Image (cartoon, rainbow, N blue to C red):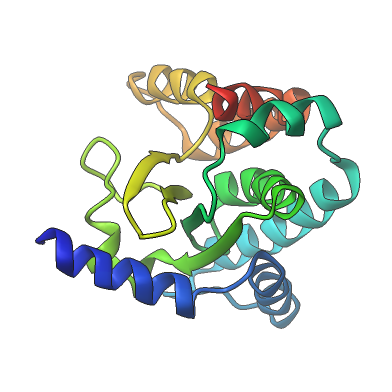
Length: 197
């Protein structure tokens, strides 16, 4: 894709994307109805229900410190905007998006969330190790230049994931439990450190 096409898609995504509040409400509504996005697989419906509960929990439990916000603020450009690819069934998204949303709200950064599977052409411009891993955050300047990207999870947890994936007896449900425990113990500290870098 040429840079002009990509810029047009980014402009469209930012104008049509959901606010975090809209995305969270959408996730909660799906969970209430026993639905998810994409194929209506039982496991994904369950992940969507878990995701709604996780987001609600982090929204209540987490407040960014003034020290963190004051350290992050000078690194934010005037008119900067953040775009996140996500899906309601994504466990990493439900753990990370509430933190990111609180920072953008406090710092006046425009945040929009779009569904990965409805935006594959644009998603394919931001692959992680060749895959459509989510959540994927794209940091944009006011004129839609790509400043950098982040995702799909804190680097420390990615190291754990790579080690788990390398095992012959890799078991995805066990990994999900491990990651859930990691997030609950970390409480966003690793995410804050990465965004300050």
